[in-house]
Amino acid sequence: MADVTLTSQHTRSYPDLFRRMILNGAEAILEESRRNPTIQDAYARSEHLRNRALHTLRCVMSMPDAWPLTRDLLLMLAEPMERAGHRADWIRYLEVGLDEAVERKELAVAAEISYQLGLLYQHVAAYRQAEAHLHRCLACNTELGDDIQRARALNFLAYIAYLQRNYNDAHQFVQQALSLGAGDPERRAWSLMVIGCLAQIEARWQDALHSWRESLTVWQAIGDRKQIAYRLRDVGLACMYLEQYADAIEYYRQALTLAEDVADPVNCAITQMNLAVVYFQDGRPQYAIPLLKDAATTLRRFDDGRHLAMAYNNLGLTYTALGLWHEAEQAYLASVDLWQQTGDTLSLAETVDGLGMVYLSQQAFAEATVQFERSLALVADDQDAPRQHLRAQVTEHLLAAQAGLKQTPIVS
Image 1 (tube, rainbow, N blue to C red):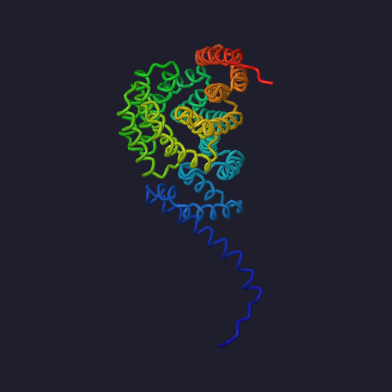
Image 2: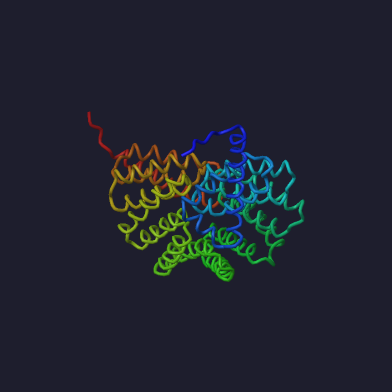
């Protein structure tokens, strides 16, 4: 067999061959996505497919003249990456893409990437960053004169304002969205979701149920299974608060099945958590524990601090109902730590109150008093209805702890 000698001509061709291979790979991924609209489901389900696409994207991003491929890959992968639970790792790619789109003055691309960044930052409760990106998205679409996309950004700004308990801002944003996007089914469905959330805050559960059911109907007509799963979850929540527990359980089971079907693990975990709350409210706390533990495991894996804090809080409440004091204390302490990171003082105050109740139930009056006073301090200066209600509740608990302290004998 003859020997093969490599020459400088061969070695110079390697970078070109590698470049051509990467570009062909990127074009093949994009062509497949154009031919097969359901390919995003496959990317959401398959870590192997996502890793292959990310490798290709990394290589393409290193080629300045390959921006059109970089741009199209970022936009194609945005939804399945978000659905699969990617957060900080995917944010880095999108931020690089956003900088490039802004520099090239591609407003529509900058608007879409900004929207996706807003979504991801909302998932990790980084609300300031989320708002900044959504305002950029809104500004780009205003410059483009695209009212439908403006309504999309406004609906999301309304939802983030709601999450931060800025209800007046949420109302104003959603009304603006309705005025711009009422004729578009998706925009209207989003507005109805936010309107239901605002009704929920005022405990107008029939109104919330009506808005959420209407939103669900719109998404069912559109056929967006991911959004259908979210809205089934909303309807289940309203049914729970209306004490329609059998209906709530059925809606949550449907939501869970659909979230599993579309490979949305974070939504699965949140749905499990909410289903657990229904069992708790229905007097079956023992059914809640495994659901909450499973949910916490998933939420921890995907770094969803806000919902993980909720899961631990609900575990604390459930363990308290079962008289499992040590487990309740540990769950509440974990929730307190997470709420401190998110900056949600009302939820933190509620969880600290729950921790105080664990101590009060064990007649540890001094420890209970410390927690109740801490809870009151967190909501001392706020006058909205949820905080006023919590203050009244915690004050009652504090008086009980102080009364217990007075009756506790002193032992030398």
